[in-house]
Image 1: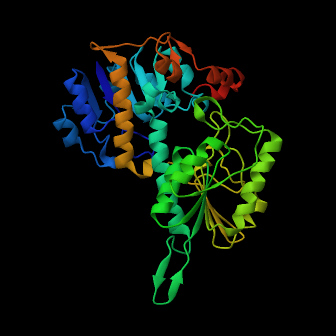
Image 2: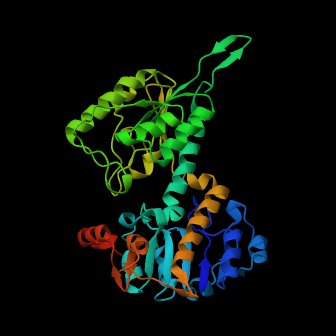
Image 3: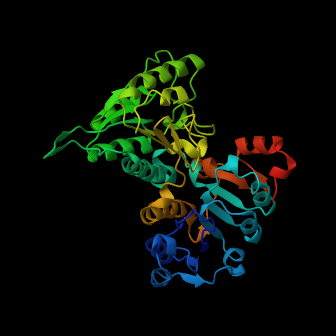
Length: 387
């Protein structure tokens, strides 16, 4: 099979979808890999390394790259122009985020392209090594703590100096998913006192195992965990109780890392402006959920806001800011998926019997097959459907 690795065109995207090591493995399995010149440069993977791994380097902008590939592998979803240049009937793998891709889904369907979204990998044992969302969340949780440490006007660890002993910083991590647990582990390694909050009681043991204190809300009688182990949207009463628990802790906290997300929905609002006003001047909030609207009412995606002495940061593209390891991790996730799909030199795509491909599939056979995306397209203004 011919596999294409295009250069990512978004200015903020520094990752590459396949690194030379993965290319080498695919070559050994008999596949042809074409890499657009400069595709890995921003992640420090040079063209020479790809050539050594057996890839063909294709000139930037070459029509042959997308037009002849059986499989196109990207990080960010393709642009409308890239979709139109793909070979009809090809397979495209990327982070599609279907609810945000209404402009390209009709084009993909029209060209009978099978789109597989890496953010829809199901949480089943067989797909664990393909879970790119968890891979990127790990890096986001790590980087968020570094951002908070840099923005704080104090150090994180306890330190005994000639001027006396400095007390450690207190950090609250909201959400004990992959990103949250990595944030807790990173903050602990840096010497902070850490509290972890999550609405799912099952996360308590994980938080405590990392040396943090579990901040527990009284949510008895409330179903807090949905499909795949993700947190589910709370009732109004339960949401109020959760907010009160967080509110009670904030006056003693130096930095907050928020990571709470509900799949397919805007990020839940867990910190109001009034709650921010209870925090000490110089405190910092780093809102990882900024791309989904933010967990803090004052979050502005991609911006930094100061409100009554408290800095609220809404970082975007955190994994892309660590492009080398992010590319390595994503590449391994994609390569594992390809090994799952490619059998005897051909694509084995059976949506009826393969729960992994079925869960990831957004368009196939000339149609949009992702139910939520279909519903959004049906109600979208005409201008939002095509580009």
